[in-house]
Length: 296
Image (cartoon, rainbow, N blue to C red):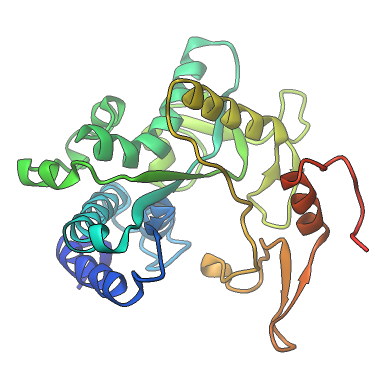
């Protein structure tokens, strides 16, 4: 059928969502239509490192895939609200992810590049769902390569978010670059270079088990500052989770990468063992995070 490149997927995603609502809605009260959709759009249709592994249409296919993801989300929400929400009493939303984008210098071009980076991550999905179209900077940079929403599409997009989930993993310095070194069209389209080093050569943070993941606490803090500002502006901020409770099947890496605060032993009956991070997180939630060490 062509996957996310075929607009027919919007209809079939609606059928799939309807099946889920009908069979599980009496128990499930919090629905996420798509988790981190841009990862599929970019890594599935630009860099090709995730399924379906396409690279030949990098100039247009990521944006077409994302366009249909947005419409599929809206279709699922429309079905839930018209058929199930009143009876089941749940809520439904979308989860997006982003790196923190820190300007590489005080130059205005780098500051604009950092803002552009956030628009190409968060605005790509959220702007259409709240305002009916893509961010202006994306229209300016991509021109006719960025799909357009019909009036019928825009009507479908209205009121399709009970909540937004934001996943954050790491940060990068962002510099303006008209021909950056990164693979794929997506970063070149943004006219940015993502940099993982301080000016003196030191890495932006300690490297984690995944090759792309650097531990950057100050980046997390900057994201949290924005969330605090949203809360003060009257946005209903509910809380946060640690990713993830359990080790999971991680994209193309399968079971080889572990994100859980609880270790899952895949070779011995899926037995579960809390990691030190699980004990720390438990204490943190109780307001006792200064204590260290494993619980007795």
